[in-house]
Image 1: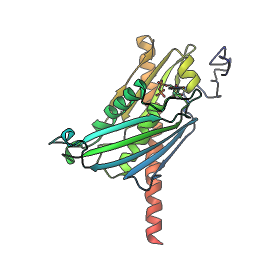
Image 2: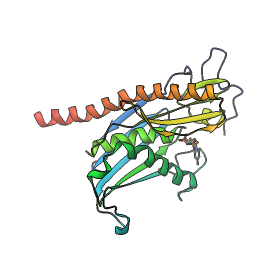
Image 3: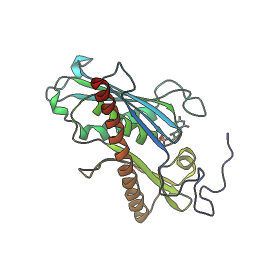
Image 4: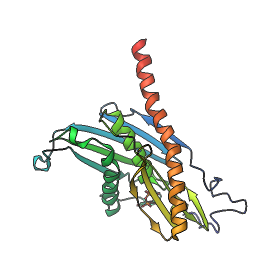
Length: 245
Ligand code: UDP
């Protein structure tokens, strides 16, 4: 294990990885990475590596879970045993069960669920490498994978966290900041509708600090939202070029 650093923010106001407080980690988004899935996406955010596959709308199993007036959205957030420093047991943990639920809740408001009664949509999220903020990166990628599958959505959901390390409000916490910092506020947003679909807080903040963290996370979401749209466009420009050849 690495030793605990004394300070998470140095004298110049820079973070452990050299970022300014309001700076995102480098992000790469790719759409259509699993040919057998109906929709898929891959995200790198800092050292996070996450792949998402969407399957459906398809028949519901077991049948009694089917709803007469809308589809059933199922999300599975799963961490590979090799994704973290200390091997993670392959059995589903309470944390994974909770994250699967909050991710589902953050995506559902964007989907026209009533278009596909008596069906289910499966969203499989595989964390290949974790570096803090995996729920947010997973939501950003899952929303892209859903759009890639062609399921009608009100808008893409985008997600990012802000928090407090030392005495500074910072954007997009990485693993050390997540673990050693004093608070973490992940949010998910539909930016055009101005609707927050996930808001959590871990740690302690004053109400002013909380407001600053939420506003900073919203700014981060807006920056990632531009990259999301570019990633989606990149796939379809590629498809168009192939068709024209
Ligand atoms: N983590 C870990 N082992 C675990 C679970 C999590 O090392 O079994 C790390 C991982 O880097 C993760 C971070 O702790 O990204 C923060 O986890 P948290 O529960 O806050 O969720 P996240 O910030 O990833 O959404």
